[in-house]
Every structure is written in structure tokens, then in C-alpha cells.
Image (tube, rainbow, N blue to C red; front, top):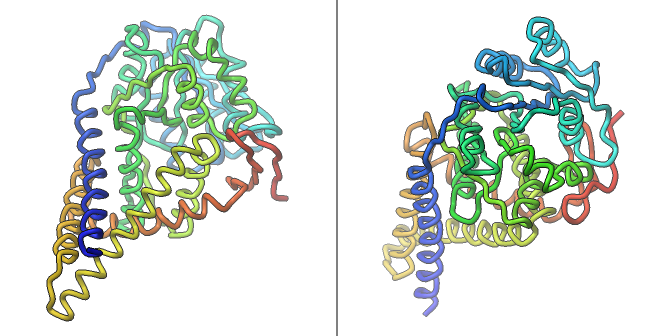
Length: 387
């Protein structure tokens, strides 16, 4: 009897994941691309910048090389001492459509939100569409027209792209990171689960003002997840734009760094969408247990030479898990070898389960030397900076 119960749990759980992946891939394949020349719409691109690196510098240059001068670009930093201000200021001198604003230290919200709000306060009054694009990621050709198109054509009020991890040093951990991001991409594109990603999202100014997004951001820890909550409350759907995949180059990644990133993403969801976090948490725990149980049952069967119904179910489960991971691999623009991807997927399941448990215990979010004490709904209760 226990064998059949184990069979049922394993097969039901892997079937749920397979259905999710297939639904997401179908949604991405059938999403029309309504491109519209951004120069025909009054658009502003807001780019929050913190720190400076080769990736950030390359991202800024890529953005300005592709952006028409009719589009207003506003870089938002905390203060002039930020290393990123040097690169931004040099661009302002040669481009009159580029602005740089300083937000000052955040006191009641996440620093990124503070920067974005300062940029919004400085935008021209005739701008019709707001585009938000994080620094540090590459910009694919035509990204702005694709992101703005559905809004300019009146087909959507909010659009969003996503990003993909590109390992730069041949390391294994960046591929674990890549699997995680692609899994999140699947959830993002699954029907009914779509949420904007702050690194590439656009919203009509009329909708932004009508939903009073600025008021939400002034007290929230994060931009995109808190926006997703506002959109859900008001019944506004996000139009996903699969062709907008920004490239995130990663090298020298450490397991601790990857783990903390996962924890932080899950904390955002936990504070703002506690029901979703609980579901994902339960799903991940059962998935880890199912994966470990299936592997253990197969090993035991090989050692003693017995074959039970649970063993057959375990083999089928592991095969289906491999198929699902390989299906997710096909979403990545430049995937690694199938064997490497499967190994990264196995480690991802274990790390993600541990990260989700940690996110449920921690009451604070730490990011770039700042500790945020966060309450229900993602509201920032207090901020402490490292000296």
C-alpha cells in the first residue's frame, strides 16, 4: 500500500510541473510581438544605478546606442558619491535627452524604489509611457519597440520582458543560477501567474498614475513585486513580451552568493504574496523530498536487486524530471550541454528548497550594505545601514 502511495505522490507532482512548463512554453510561443517605433510615442526610460562594474558600464552604453534621442533617459542614483555617477555624467555631456538625478538615502522604502521615485519626479510632463530597465543587463536589439509596442497600440497597459543568465567563465554554479532564472521565467509566463520583472517593464503613465503606484513604492521594499500586487488588486493584466530577454553575464559566482539571491527573491514574495509563497514553499519541499526519495529508492533497488512498484515509479519520476528540465533548457537562449543542465537542475532543486525555508525564518532583507526590517505587504518598517 505504501508503495502505491509513493507512486501516486511522485507521479502527480511531476505531472503538475510538466503541465506548468508546457503551458508556459505554449504561452511564450503564441505571444504576438506588437512592435511600435518608440520614437512615435513619448517615452521615458528610468534606469536605477548602484555601483559600477564592467556589466553596468556596458549596459549603459548599449542602452544609449539603441535609444532614439526622442526618448528621455533618466539615470537615478542615491548620491554623487556612487561610483556609477561618473559613467552616467560623462554620457549626459554629449546627450541632451539624458538626465541624472540623485535620490538621497532611502528612509521608508527600498533604495531602488527611492531612486525610481526621484526619476519619476524629474520626468517631462508630456511623457506617455514609463519604461523601467535595470543597469547591469544587456539590451537585445529592438527591445524598446517590442516592450512599448503593445501599450502604444492600445493592446495592453503593462508589459514585461525577462532576463537570461549567461555564464562567462565556464563555471558550474552560474548554470544553477540559469536554471533557477528559467524556472522563474516559466512561472512568470504560466497563465494566471504573470508578473512584471523590474529589469524590463513598461506601463502607461495614465495607468501608473491611476493606480497610484508611486504611493505604493514610497513604503515598499521592492518595485516589481509590489507593482504586481497593485495590478492584481485592480485586475490589470501584464502582457509578457518573450522576445525581450536581457542578458545577465555572470562569472565568479559563489554558492553563498547564489543562495542569498534566492532567499531575497523568495522573501519579496513571502512579504507581498504570502499565499503564493506558501504554495511555492510546499511545492518545493515536496519536490525536494520526491527527488530525494526517488533517488534513494532507485539506489536501494540496485543494491538488493529487488523491483517494487515504488521503484518503477521512482525511475519514471526521475526520467520525467529529466524531460521537464530539458524542456526548460530549450527556453534558454544559449543553453549548456544537456548533462550539465540536468546536473545544475538537480542542485537547483536542493538549494531552492533550502532557500525557501530560510526565507520563511528571516524577518529582515539585506541588500548592498542595507538591512531592511519588513512588515506585512512588503512595507519597510525600519532601515539600518552598515557603517
